[in-house]
Amino acid sequence: MIRKATVRDVEAIHGLLKKHADRGELLPRALSDIYDDLRDFSVFEEKSNGSIVGACALHVCWEDLAEIRSLAVREQYQRKGIGSALVTAAIAEAHALGIKRIFTLTYRPDFFSKHEFEIVDKATLPQKVWAECIKCVKFPDCDEIAMLKPL
Image (cartoon, rainbow, N blue to C red; front, side, top):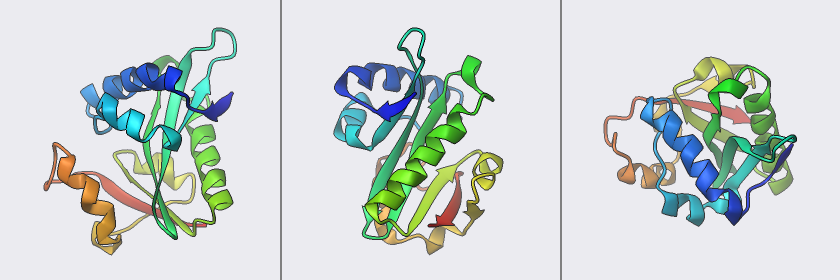
């Protein structure tokens, strides 16, 4: 079941993202950042025990642009459509908000290609997007792949 995250989910989201960040699969997020951006997050909750097995954030950057970020699924639940369901929910939310374009910075371009995202040059994204990059441990040597999907 996909639902919007609540404050009760923050620790679980942080733990999930940390495991993936420790393996170099996504960028780390501080606990305080997750609280700050809590309204961006949706979670996939396991029906049988209520545990959080996946998370994804949709961050609005500008009037016509949003970013999918912090997409992670517990390893034992991967390849079961949970990541795709979270991305589909984020795209639907972007549509509902009137967003015209959605992008992601990823290490998994094949996954996002399945959702009709196309690789773009990072330089084509608005400068406002990079404001948060200054906080990144990899700044200025970003090795993520920029992908964009018009809505």
